[in-house]
Length: 568
Image (tube, rainbow, N blue to C red; front, side, top):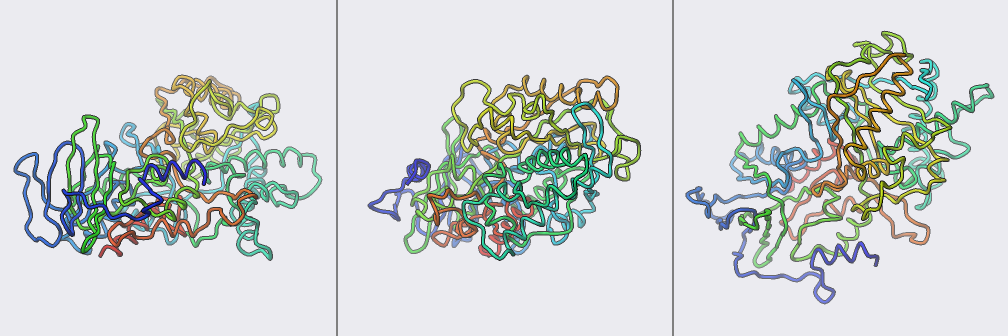
């Protein structure tokens, strides 16, 4: 058993002598859910008692039928679906942060907002988030294949060339690899990664022919394909080929909401509050205690920096904590989580996507099309995605402020991807994706996407180092391309999802299994395990629990619907 599992077991108070003890704290009452949360100590009747206490002083509170841990999309979805079907249910949502939304977070900019977390609706057909957006009348734009690709000298690739190599890259990633993985004659080995086939000699990524530009096209394809770790949240050589695209997910292309995800979260929050849910912010849960005696009692304890506590009771709890929190800073479960649950938490991977957002007084790039001329983008004349190609002379420049290496000595971050050697980084350069936020909703901003290991390295750099690097890269590439001086941003915002102690990353993935651990690796069974109800009273939701739609906002939403149905 490795060190990580030992730490998980210690955090969850696991004992070999008594793998499933049934502690009976004196404060617990039968058939009640007992919660300890910051600031005050209260005791609330259980669900069978139909009386409702009122707040008359700091040490009293109404009872709750259900407590939901986490006010992200999964938690809000759970509350919404419970309350729309059973409006009399008394629901409390405990959120550690000072805001709702979890890994969906929109930063206000002028009259709009920039999405610092999730920003794309993946697959518009059969997507509950898309259905909700249309129900609310929210404007959206569907994505296209148009993008601007800029060489280090500032020259822009012709649109015809861009479409050709982009089609191969996307086709290989989203069509050929899934066919190999799920429909091929042979089942891929557990140790085979997405990168192994993506960059193999027979990969359609490289196309055919012996044109003079073939070598350049192949290099562009490789560099751009490596940047897909912004999609997976992990380097492609960490992602399992065997389980690539095994699920039945949404289809129909992607879309972005013109005003970002903010209206969705605002509506959902307002709706659950109107239906009677209580949302308590800045209440990090530290203990979840279950007493099973003539039924199951669950206690959740949450403390603040001041050390004060409040205790809540309810009959059921729904845990929607991110997989990263369950892996690296979980609350103490008593009874401890079963070993099977701990092993599934350990085996699944938790990836990362960070952003560096540069906000300007005006969108000086507006109107430039895919080929570098006017009017070749979408209906606004703009292209949403800019791809910067690395140079042969300086191949690591686009890997972040520290060029893909650690910025000084530091303790490893929880979940951080291992550091590559300088030789590897030089031989495997990456393109850099810059999203044109202005094309989405008119906000004059550019968002640099830093996925997987490059997101990790960037978090270890200072704010000033990150700002200076991003500003110089944009000025250099776009300045040469437009042949004019580029202004500095008025504000730079960067995300740090890995060091966020209430996230420890962005979304889940299924990692490859080392050859010497054959048969012991992660699989969809682990996702099913994470969705399994414990002791009849402790329910689990979150994107990492959704077999078919993990690593997405709609997966989090669907998991909330699933658990609401179980509770009801």
